[in-house]
Image 1 (tube, one colour):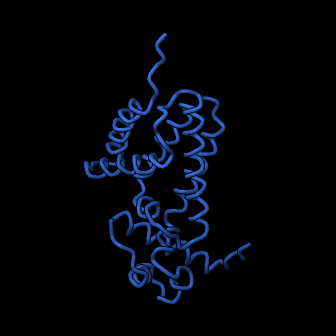
Image 2 (spheres, one colour):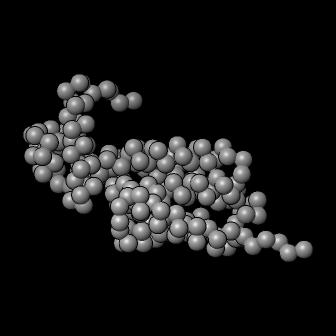
Image 3 (cartoon, one colour):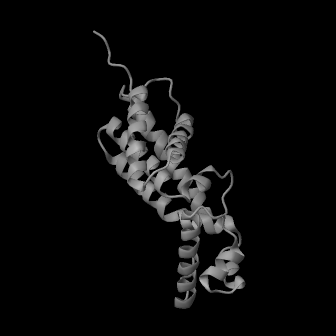
Length: 192
């Protein structure tokens, strides 16, 4: 169990993460010295909270990962397997096109923070469970594997990001691309 931060340390942590969030949203690579200067804090203060830029980036991405994990838990509780899978994947791609911190954290082969590893494992497990349940219900083609989901969702998000546009336009584009993807994912109706 972690010890709660003192008020001043908590304020510094929040300031560091806010500055990092702004930089990530602008597409600026995180450098701890740069973050310290922009936050008006000493470099040592930043390093006490975050040993590496990767740890800071993961802290920036944590709220999005936590929200996706909560969405996954809701999807698992949905009684309709197709709707649950579709809703979870929609939310996953929406997060990828609206939160610049998510893609590099999701793509990283190792994590700086244990919490990130736990959240990524939970999301992978949820995606697998939702796909398996939809496949077992006959709603998804039999040849689609859980390992296919992440690259496919990342591919859609990448296509949306390349196309660009305002956030609302990017979400609309993601929904169009996902609708096309879902038509291909859905199992063909059984002929009698």
